[in-house]
Image 1 (tube, rainbow, N blue to C red):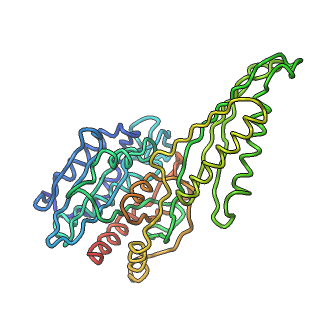
Image 2: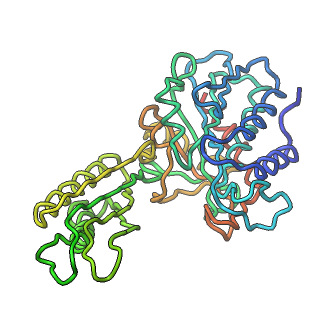
Image 3: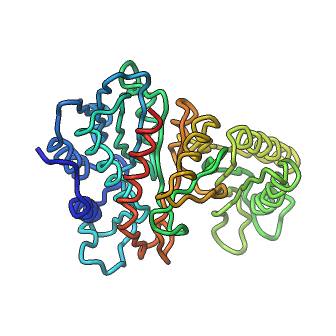
Length: 382
């Protein structure tokens, strides 16, 4: 049995995890490493749980001494298909894969908080959810739909952090309302009639249709969405045609929708379908739209819980706190917050490289700061 994790142990854990990144739902080595660390903690208050239908997930429950609620804490565990170019001595051992989004820091911080409460029994119950598949395949939604968070395993509140290179190392950033936008994938197929370039009257040109549709799509944000609220719809892929003298009978578009609230995303989706219906009728073609949001709902922080969180962080003399603006990046913790109230916040890791880049290298000094801030908040919150 190990005592509470020391700074040097935490850095070793982070570097070990950094070397074994695995993509969504493939995090077998990562999960086994996490399980090994947790099994070395004092087990007196702990209950460890794995999931047959989500085999790379790991949950740990800490029994409170006089529980009045159950607090959940989520740490995502998957990496990205990025070829690392940091030059670090503990660089990724898995070619073409990297913890380019800082999930190695997320896991290490969670283990640090868990190690504390394995020795110092909390008043309230705690549930730590080491979640697979955040970057893709929405592991949070999968777990929720499988009924994982039921009975004694259901948190009354859920918390999670995400690292950011844009804040000084160890700084806690948060805001009331939306922290991250929701994101939905859009696939559009246009079916017309191919033909000879010299006889356009005998064809239904899907390149013309697609061009018109793309132009009309841009009016959704500028004319259907409150400009103060903001939203994004981007078409990033357009495929049509084979050769210069043949009119294309099919076009395929791919894009993304981003919105700060779920209501906004649904409004954008509705307007997109209405515009597409009008274009199809106008050009006498078929337009098929598929929209897939999965678990990537907006991260909408609960007002009451977030106020308590911010007040603690702002008023603690040893914590650096900064209010942040909403980000248009996606995060599947938004789905869990739509089901269970809670708060997501930023942890500054101060780096010149951005998230998801091959050179992203967060400052490890942020780990201790995060553990102290989170542990202190939980103790105060109980």
